[in-house]
Image (tube, rainbow, N blue to C red; front, side, top):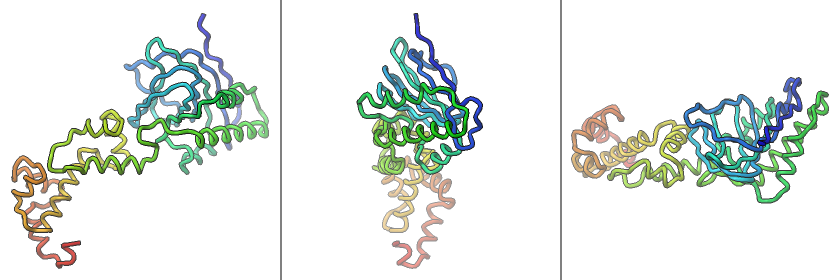
Length: 288
């Protein structure tokens, strides 16, 4: 006989003036999320602690993470997501669903970071015990009791995130990740670069890499690399000494005409017009 979900509703009738825990539970057996079904939007925050098993976490921002026993998944309002085990595998979880202004403030200040959905907690039994204490709360209706529960949840989450390492390859710092990604995209501008290879070097699928890069940089990886090639072309034109044909060859364009077309599209003037304008700059400005 399969054990079903054990659900509780600690603060079912409470308006979240500060915060509330709307639902908790243990789900001892979870099936895989069907790949042909859309991702789920929860509409609230949730903390999911995996007691046993392993699987994957995916979300609408392109993140795709391995999840294993002892990991904490943070779910964010309105961020499409799915998680679960492969077919036939074990998955046993505790979860808390919560919302309210205090948690929105945590998110706004970066204490809850949707760029860090998977967190690996130290391997000891205390985390399961601490999560279980809140998961199996009785219903609470008075403002004082609800405030106590919300305060306990804040302490639990802050302690867990402080103790955790990120499940994201290369660390959870978006700016460090973006710096590494742009360095890879800017390397060897004169030769073709396979963007799936860049994604693999960062530990992501190409689709996940493209989505995360666009979220952080505001443009796709392909557009960023194209722009950097044209930035380098502008530098070479200003420096002088090379013809348009030589610049096209150095930066890997198929021909001088191909270079001229791309330059005009992205810069807004032809290489010849740009060169003419550069020669009118004061010498110290042209070399800056």
